[in-house]
Image 1: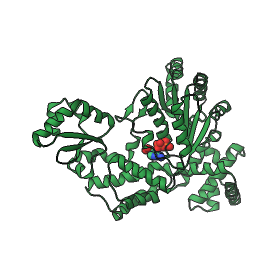
Image 2 (image 1 turned 135 degrees about the horizontal axis):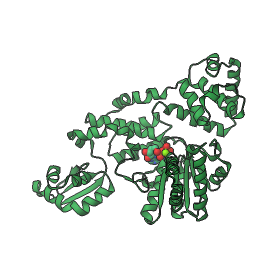
Image 3 (image 1 turned 120 degrees about the vertical axis):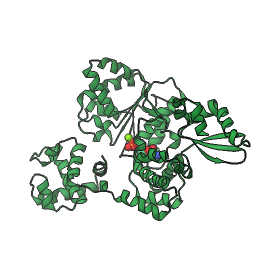
Image 4 (image 1 turned 180 degrees about the vertical axis):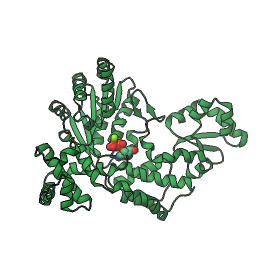
Length: 448
Ligand code: ADP
Ligand code: MG
């Protein structure tokens, strides 16, 4: 049937509407076709249904009806089309692939990230509720809304969901989702082209501005300047601002005080790591989205072994999915353990002293050299102690070796630092949080 369609349609038409469809199941009178997204589903239903039905009945006259459902083709179906396996080779990074068809270029919104596919647990309840609430009362309830939490815990998903809901509810609103990194790049570009005023006026016309990973603007004065004026402009007219960050405003280094107080002036909600039940629910949700069907035992295994990061949870599931596509079978628990063995132990989890120093320095917005130098400035003393502590905890280095790595300091200095951080950790909640974030950086630095 696909062959027939290909012959009778233009190439563009065929690839847009038919390429990733497949027959999911059929019974006596009907055929169920799997399509990649709601947009394509609607289009096939409204524009192509007659043609498809004709073509199907040409081969099987009893068929009276075609039904369409969103989801990936089932495992058994995929095998026959080898190109699909190749397409899915990059399966791990598919969630970061912004160039795909679900992306709207004017708002930067990706249709995939909606509230409906976001699992709510005690770890993200507040953030979720706040995000949902502002969609019903844009600009008037919590402004700005500031969401923070570690890597891969759903911040981007929530921001995008806000944008998508507003788009669906009220398409006349002007929305922009932008990462702080791109925001900064666009400012630099505008400065270079001398059209910064145009850019500012573009931002100030928005009804909803969402800046993701705002910690990126640490130390970037010009960017902070523009954000400050844009903020005031929007805020003054009750336009909604949503920000996300890997840490609370007060823990962002080199952030101008006037911005910090603006960020703290609305609502702040955090996302922490999900508990087991939530992890399992998320896995089930993703399994459903992707059309996989694994044993409960398999999902439980993944949820038990990956605890800190939802993106990794998804990565593990995708890995198992890729295996089952390539070998055309649903792996049992023993095979899954094998498949994930390398994933769970791969080198990116191992830590090196260099990555620790680099991560600590980056986190506190100082240079690695500052950690090593003899300075006693407050801004570097604490990061240095944290670095010593982490080197001790995460590597096999001895106290003297750690002292050596940090500019030839005495081992007693290192011992003192480790003990100090350790005892502070039990009473200093922000410090605890900082260490979680730094460790995340260390673990993730091998990924890139
Ligand atoms: P962050 O921006 O915090 O680093 P993301 O929003 O990119 O994290 O989330 C990483 C991945 O995990 C995304 O694919 C997202 O859909 C998924 N995810 C995170 N939290 C949830 C959740 N509660 N329910 C469903 N999916 C989630
Ligand atoms: Mg993100």
